[in-house]
Image (cartoon, rainbow, N blue to C red):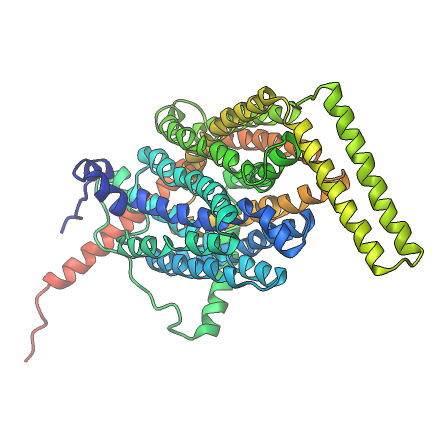
Length: 543
């Protein structure tokens, strides 16, 4: 019996209308998953100002809020990769989307900052589970020559979701309040979960076999019961299997370099995503609530970048050694350099405005000193309250004058945004090729664990530390985010260079994977032939 063949995704796409493609085509559905996840994850980045006012926290407190969810993500992601390699991936994604949407809405009921931190930290399980499963699914739905496009469509939604989370979330927070922002942004998850459940589960290695022999596997994967032997035995089996799987993953030279390079890059990118709205407000004089909209614009530059990057990965990467990593490394180095130039552009105000700012700052300092003197001399409570009100008025006046000084030169501000839009668009070009290259370098039955290990390194050594480090540096330099961001920016450039070195080993590792696929295919053909012979043999004679 011959193995059934299936139409390649490009043929299937041509037969569907735009709405049907969006709601049923795997790369689009998995893109919607990452879109709602990024919306839920990034909404807090657009609500920093109202959250500070509500709970009375500073940069360090916000850093904890942003970092703990990422740290929890890192703790979950490798076991989630194990799950992706052994269970129904569409089911894991659907369950997770429903869970994180509920947690996002629950955050609106927070009565204090520790409660909000706890609920938001629990959200870290979301992308930790969905990303290994989604990457594994794309690797099985799409052959090598189409993975760049597939990942570009899926990862494009990352930037749309980040932009919507920061921009729309910030706008809702400024008008209706941060609690309503959390509730409203959680609603789309229910629809996306339904679409995820409706995805069919391909056999692991299906696309690799299609590329090798032009036909898919004869039988789908089995649907195992995870706790058939009990939960305790499941945990023991998972621990033993994970140790073996991770050793295999780390034996792939491409992955060793890629893990280091991507962790360094994501350190800087996550720092930017967390603090760029505040950088626009403090260092460039943008009004509160408006900085989030500008960051949303920068994030949206990733959409054309990632689409162009997917096309380049499929068309140009095969023409150079390790192209699926070499091209991303080049894009990252160039894009991040242009982006960082924006930090060096500083608006300058006329001498009169600078003098006015110094006078306002001096009045604020004197008013605060007067409050301290009254408190030290044991003055009455009414006198201290009046002095404190006067000091607050002086601080607000100094703040307004300082913002006027910062925002005086709009040309500089537009130049900063232009550098960062162009730079981020070039950075985004790296994502499809990078993910496709890592998919090529990891065996199909280990892709969930492979991307879990990839996410773990990226989160623990890159993303989780970034908001905390930048917040601490900003506090050390008198809330100066320009200095803090400039200090961490070289880390990403080093990461791009490490990633460029990984290109040397990609082609060799990919060849090994294809040989393993052919061996698995031959084994499966023998197994089916044996089964067919058993069915065709006559029953034994009985006397």
